[in-house]
Every structure is written in C-alpha cells, then in structure tokens.
Length: 138
Image (cartoon, rainbow, N blue to C red; front, side, top):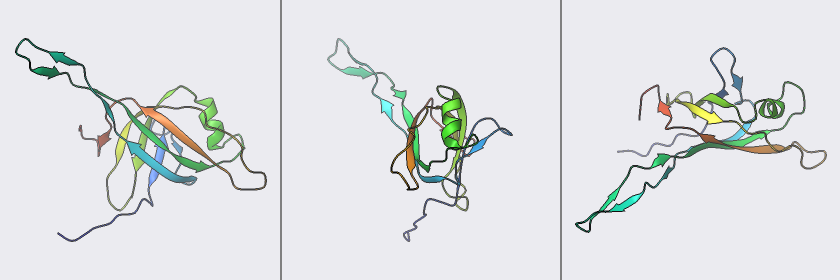
C-alpha cells in the first residue's frame, strides 16, 4: 500500500444549531479532536480474576484562533456562550470527506497578548460523548 498523506485543511469548524452556526474555520490556525476514556472500576472476583467495567468517554476539541475584539468576533461569541452545551461539526479536510459531529461545553477564551501583533488564543472544550463520523455511531 502506498503512503498517503492528507493535510489539515481546507476544512470547516462550526458550533451551534444548523442555521445558527458559528463558523470558526476562517480564523482557526490549529484544531484537534482528541478522544480519551477514563478507565472503568477494577473489581476483584472470588476466583482471583479482575473484572474491569467499561470506562467513560472524556474527549476534547481544542485549537487556536486569531483574536478579534468586535461584537461579532469569535472571542465575544465564546464569552456569550460560556458553559453552554453546543453541537459541533469538524471537517478536517473537505476533499477527504470525513466529518465529525458531537457536543461540547463552550468556555470563554483568554483575551489579549502582545501589543501591536496579531494575537491568537487557545480553546479547549470538553466533548460530552463519543462523536459520530459522517453521522455514524462509533
């Protein structure tokens, strides 16, 4: 099999309900969807074996975007939607066809940085359950 490399972008990153989505892609310089799972409880049984319960999904969606300070900016959007649960759609590369959908909890981002420079800010939001790929359960 030949080596195939796909780069991140061009793609999309949207948060919110269909028709009222906030598009992040035009300002995002980095984006990652990271799955993780907390280990389930380990229970010893009489035979000496250990039963391990299924763990819980603990993913996150994170990245970095250019800051703007207007009322319609992404910075302002994160502050207005702090602690709200939002649907998201992440398409890492439009041509590749893989689309991730799920729900995350939005947090306000840091504002500011170096004077006279195009500053960026990082975001990292908890993903509430295993995302779907192309609307299929994983």
